[in-house]
Length: 128
Image (cartoon, rainbow, N blue to C red; front, top):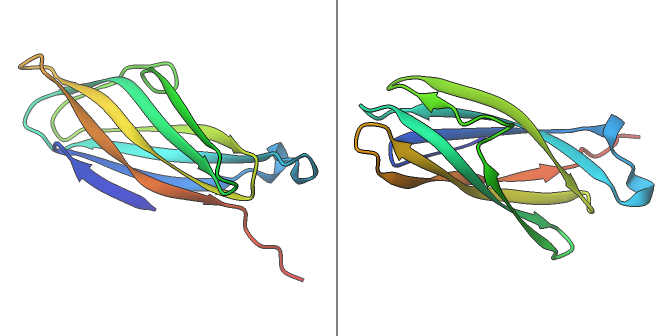
C-alpha cells in the first residue's frame, strides 16, 4: 500500500490485478485500485477534479483528467474518510500511476492540490 499526506489530506492506495478482466495474449492487463482519502484538516474539503498520469513499462504514458471520482465529488468533514474503487488497463504486465486531486477548502473557498502517491500495478508471477 502507498500512502502520502499533502495539504493535510492523506491518500492511501492499494492495487489488485484482475485476471478475469485481462487478456494477456492481447496485451490487455486490468487492475483495480482502492483509494482512501482522509481529511486531517480542521476544515471540510471537497474533491472537485482528478488528474492521473499512467505509465506502462513499455514507455507509453497517458494523462486522464476529469471531474470527481467514480462520478461523485465527495465532501469530507474534518476527520472523515472517503473510500472508492476504480480501475486501470495497461498494455504491459506492469506499470504505475500517480496524480493529484483538486480540492476546495469549504471555509475559505480556496483551491489546492493534493498529491496521490505513485503506486505500481504488477501482474503476480505464476508458480510452477
